[in-house]
Image 1 (cartoon, one colour):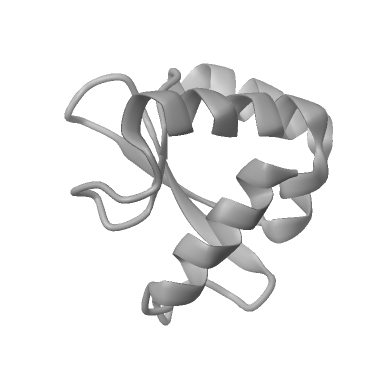
Image 2: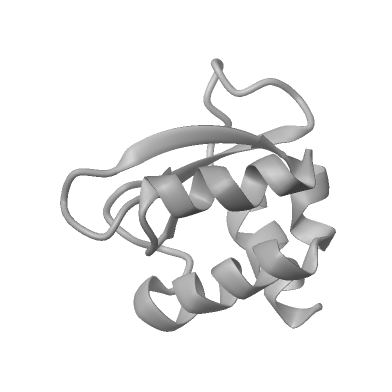
Length: 87
C-alpha cells in the first residue's frame, strides 16, 4: 500500500488536467521517448497486476519526471492487455 500512498501524494500536488474526468488519472505508457497517454479509473490502483506495474514505474522513474504524469515502463500492448482484464 505504500506505493498507492506515494502516488496519492504525488497526484494531489499536481494540477488536474481538464480532460481527465473525476475518478480517473492519466498514465503515460511506453518504453522509449514515444509514449501513449491512457486515462484509467482510479479503482485500478487497488489491483495486484496494476500495482506491479506501479512498482516497476517507481523503480525506473520515481513518481516525478519530465512527462508531468505517471509513466509505466511497458509496451502499450501489454498495458492494454492488463487493463482489459481489469475492466
